[in-house]
Length: 104
Image (cartoon, rainbow, N blue to C red; front, side, top):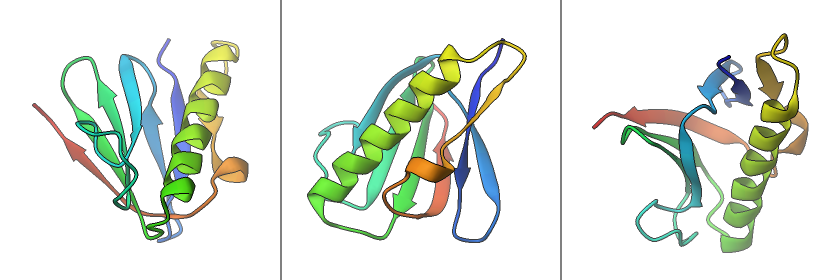
């Protein structure tokens, strides 16, 4: 069963993001896992990446964002197969300005 988390975007819409076949959640870039930038990157087994762009550049906030996404993924995967979407809304430390998807 496919599982998703619902991430609120500042435009007012939520974006569903799959948590299946996910191999890593990184603060900053997947190559460095350093929270110097304004992104949280989700990397999948097939090489696809999803980048959550946010506005705060404070390193600790970026790590908190990564942890919030990881916790939401864990919660989504623990739910019944009858509930395919887990929500992130209450636990995000900062807002997501946009989401970009890169395919291999």
